[in-house]
Length: 345
Ligand SMILES: Cc1ncc(COP(=O)(O)O)c(C=O)c1O
Image (cartoon, rainbow, N blue to C red; front, top):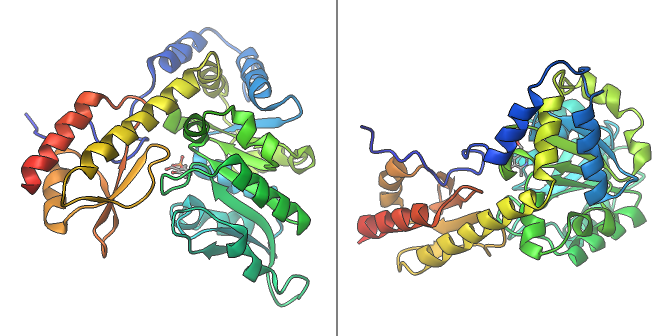
C-alpha cells in the first residue's frame, strides 16, 4: 500500500466535494429542465446571490475561476487599457497569460510584501494617463483573500474602490476565496463586496466545497450588458447549468459557505501555530485565511512532500505554501506536524 497520504496541504482544490453539495447535485439529477440556465435551479441560485449580495446585482455562472476572472476583466476593459494587480496575483502568474490574451490588456503587476495592493503602489502608474503612447490603467484587480493568505479589511477595499472611481478606474475582485475572507473578518459577503464599492467580482465555489463552478457578479450593471455574449464566446456558458446552480444554492443556503470557510481558516491557524513552534520553521505571512507560508529547510522538503504533498512557493528562499480546506481535520494536522517534527529533528 502506498505511504503517500490521501490528504494533502497542496491546495484547497485538492479537497473533494462537501456532502451537502454532492447531495444537491444528486437531487438536481431529476428529469429534464431547459438547458443553458433557464431552469428553476438557476433561478433559485441567483435568488440566493441576491439575498447575500443585493438584488441589484447581475450574476452569471461559469465553469472555473480563470474563466471568471478573464471574462469579468474583459467586460471592464478595452485592449488599450491596463490592469493593475499584485505580482503574486493569480491573474498574473497562474492563468497562462489568459487575461492578456482575452482582454488584450497589459497587466501592470506591483510588488507587495503581503499580496495586498495599496494606492501607494498604484499612484506611480498613473502619471501617463491621457498620453496615447501608454496603456491606460482602467482596472485595479485584487484577490480577496490574497494568494499570500492575507485578507483586505473592508476599509482597505473601500480606499481602493474610492481611489479607482476617482481616477476613472474600476475595482475587480478575484474572490476565489471570498468566503474565507468574509469568514476571517466575521462579516457578511456584502460587507466586502457591494458595500465597499466593488464593481465586478469572481465569486469562488470550488475552494469552498463545490465540485466546480464560479460566478461572475456585477455590482455595476452597465458592465454586464453584453456579458451573456462574452460568456458564450468565451466558452463558459454551461449547457447543464443546473448542476452548478444547485451547488451554489446549497452553499449559500443556511451558513454552509461560512462554516466551510471558517473551518478551513481555523485549520490554517492551527497548522501555523503548531509549525511555528518548531525552531527550524519560520512562518512568513500573517495567517488570515486558509493559507500558511513558511520557510522550511530545503533538505527536508522532498521527504515531507512524499507523505503530504504541498508546493514550494519560492525555491530561492525555501518558502513553501500549505493550504487547508473545508475537510482538513485536526488529526491531519497532528499527523503532519508529527511527521515534520520527526523529519526535522
Ligand atoms: C486566487 C485564485 N484565483 C482564481 C483561481 C481559479 O482558478 P481555476 O481556473 O483553476 O478555477 C484560483 C485557483 O487556484 C486562485 O487561487
